[in-house]
Length: 373
Length: 193
Image (cartoon, rainbow over the protein chains, first blue to last red):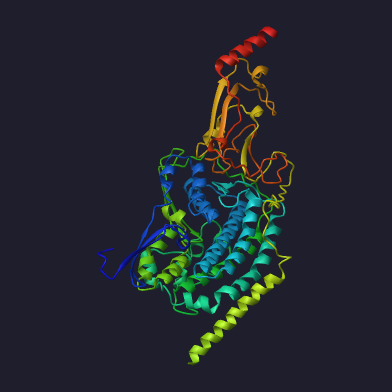
């Protein structure tokens, strides 16, 4: 941010602002209503996650990973335990793998429902927000049924999961899917193809694929730009190679490829794919097997380091763990997908109006807990 | 001009489509009511069938509870806690497994373990607790556990334990005793015996 000229004005959006999705401050240089520069100021939610981990044992890190991306805690747990299991060379029972996939995909749906609902709220559609939260509630009930917590689960452990599935779990999830899949049509009717919504989002904040790649943007934001890149498909971890699903990409259906509407719609399509994965996982879920069987008595990985990436609902979530052979990690670094998504905000919202900045920021689906850590 | 009219037409039709969805919800309001009148109604605890009977087993994480008579003071939960919200102090007893009635100490746990310690302090600060449930697993006597939601059978307490003062959220499960008290108590009981 250079010198502010006479006819320009600096405007602070946030840190307490409903559309910044958390405690984010945007220092916006405006020229009339046109935005000429944005500087996101982060750190309001910094809780020293990485430094805390150096003083906690490997089990105690898992509750901290929950609190990074608090919208999709299961996926955060998942990334960490996959990294740890690779470092310790633990073979996890099949049942555990399937349970993890079910939980991760359920949480992906819940996370996208929140993202889409709140995005509607950002651009002025209140009703879809309520409908999506109502359906997200059902997923949270399933989590509560399984592990007793609604948001911060501490469910996946190194080598297993904390609770086995309750009796009747499979039927509950089938029931949810039967309920949920027709609802997608309803969301499309009420929000996605609404002309006012299209006018607000189509052609706005176009993120070209080369810019997205150079900024390291990943996940639905990258796929919205038309790049077919999904770690579940391209670098399968856990047992994702066993599932048959598509990777939806943005095609510029109502505007340009990579606009806000594409990023929105990719998430909508991803929920269908997640439902597909869920049905396959439920069908093939092994009936017996102890979920605690592979959990090591003492987690003390050998000297070495590991970098493991996983596909969280927000994108490429990676953990870099350095072990010095003690029960505590020497260093734990988390590569946050929302952080890179936020970094591209200045690039794509220059020249747009102030109200469009809110639409662009919402379409990036950032979670500040993960950016600040 | 054609485009202009088309835009208006699309706006009206898509809005009416959205209105139809909301109207359907309005008409089915009795069936699909999701709002709960909170103080009168409460969200039920999920019916969780775990396939076996275990009276202590409760997955809902609302509040930590300790059956202090069963605690042997092994400090495993204190070490497991990631945020150090459990604070335990213990005093050694002269005779292992012996009841000391004057300070309300029972010598043997429900599982039949003879206790070598009197737990003189067992404080859980629920303002610090992160509800991760990590402390409940290592407990050898299964005496620290999470108590459940509104329909918990074992305990009446539930998730509504707000207080006016922060200090009231520090739950003290053990009675404070000093070395001297234990010494005098055991010597008295020795005289009686």
